[in-house]
Amino acid sequence: MNLQAVYHRIKQNWSYAYDAETLHIRLRTARGDVQRVRLLCGDKYDWKRTNMEIDMERGVSDALFDYWEARVRPPYKRLIYRFALHDGEKTVYYSEAGFDTELTPQYYKGAFDFPYLHETDRIAPPEWVKDAVFYQIFPERFANGDPSNDPDGTEPWGGEPTPKTSSAAICRA
Image (cartoon, rainbow, N blue to C red; front, top):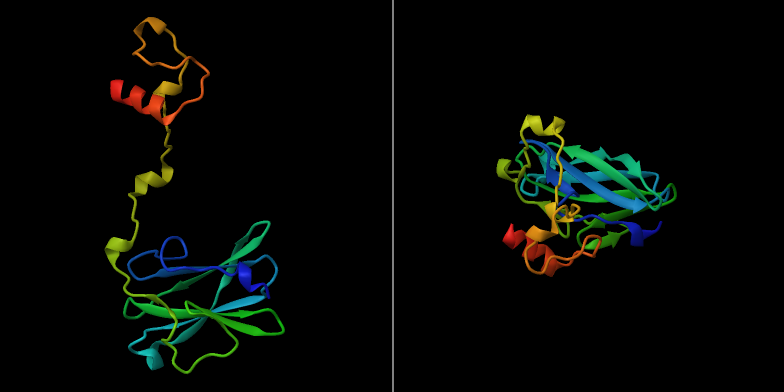
């Protein structure tokens, strides 16, 4: 098992609030290296009643990696978790503390911790955005039709834009 390829971190696109009650948790492994990944999770203050094991789905793969995902609905909107990676012959447990071949009885030590699933952490764009088309227009990149109205310092057409010339064009616009 190529442990150097295993990657996860709290927040960003690796663990995030999908809606008011659901977390999406993702893990990266080397392509074709791991046959099965299970998410071992629960509430750190009520582990005995809330702990569960969820099979993660291999969502997509690229040339180098497989990306796994699980959806979790934590009963108290907080979650600690670790991963169990299976390659057919052995199982390795991955937590924020690193890798281990055995589960520690102290389930909370070293676990990834999503402290609270709050509505304000969720990105909730309006419905119309799903069908919208966005354009990024950079007026200073268009052909110069009338050089007589150019501000001082205008670069010739086809020149390489720089932060200095771009900001000058923006400030004078």
